Image (tube, rainbow, N blue to C red):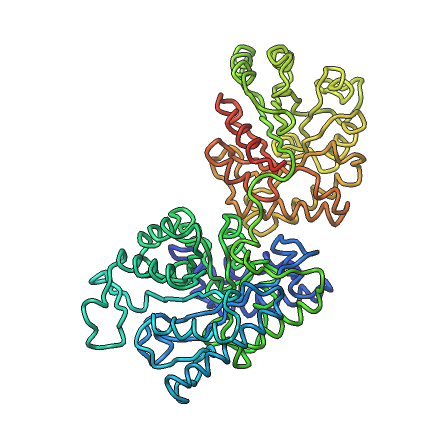
Length: 624
């Protein structure tokens, strides 16, 4: 297999060779996540080498991220250990420092190292030399009696190091470790066999406990504040503090796209802890990360407590543009290997990278909304009567849309076009287009309509290559290219349809199919301002099934990448790419928030009066 086909290879391993599932998706019970991940990472490295790219740049490319400018992450140094990772009485598993006030990653490393060594001296002075031993992740585990004592000594070290104001605090509570499903309480003194009743707290009491922390200490990130299945507590906490605090899901989400989706649905948190070996393949890790970022969440790439000196996640965090990484204290070789790789990457990139700094929470999240003028097309196919056309378009005519902010076009059946034009006369909000055209000129071509005739009828827009034309009437990629060429020569705007069948999606051929369809038409296009691309997953047309946001964005990104590779950045960044496939007023906003979706080609829902809601939603999403 081609090593640059990361998604196809990962899907082969996960869905075919392994094939085991549970309620949360592919569970990898047959081959095991570690075995699959080892191959997945090796394929990723091989793909980078084959593409003659640094690993971080290659990851950016396959993840649909910019790869001309990069972001260096804020390191989250785990400097005090507790919980199940340490022998003290500290309930929280980790207390971390984040040097968000640094201007470069190198400076952040210097600040982190200085605070770390100052903390060592503070611990030695207060608890003795024996308290300075380090744990698995390089953090100290002094004999503190409670969480507040640990935070106080950490704040003392930050102040004495001279970096007060530049350093914020984070924690991994790992609350599942001290939660009792029987009592539904959290024991903050769980290592003490005689833990007093006042240390056992309900979820509501824990929320107040955390809010006291936030008021007293410079917290910016709290990870796993509740049990992994206490969704209700997460949702309540997120509603109360999520606007100014990063709430990270680790045990809650386990880097699983389905659990991430549930987290989004119930608004449980606002950040994902990304661990590649939790999910078991690079493709699924990218999917989880992109899903979180597209929703405006933060993403913190993370190591594991049992680490090796492999530095893959250093390239991963830069490639995915997440802006934050957790990989231990500035101590121990398996932790330092990641930090050293990040230093090398920053040095190599020079002015082509910036430091995430205070924007670490959402620097990788794309701006929600449409960056190019939206286009909304309604394909009425072979439906309706003259009476129904007039009735529906009379409602559309009252639409108060701004034609400078959205293009709205109805592709009516050819026989209904005069009636549609009559109703919409003088209306600038909605235009009329034709569903098909001949690949020949005028002449003895019974039943055909030529580009010249479309132009003569006062029409500007034409659909080419719709899946029904391809499947029912045998139109080929070459036929579609000829039609496109003729249409553009006559000054028409072409809405060019591409998309894959269900079998092609299931066998990982989506990108291959769309590339083939695009490469057939690219050579004949002489004016890209006259082209609109419509990606329509054929398996979603009229079925009620909608591609997930991740599936839609991935396909749109790959189409734009094909344009960039063939025609350059100027064309790729300006051509509008529409999504089509059971679009309706209820799902169009989420789809329109994706960075590479520039509008919609709508089927059945365009034959209803509330189609205007889709047009209005697209207009509102346009970031002019």
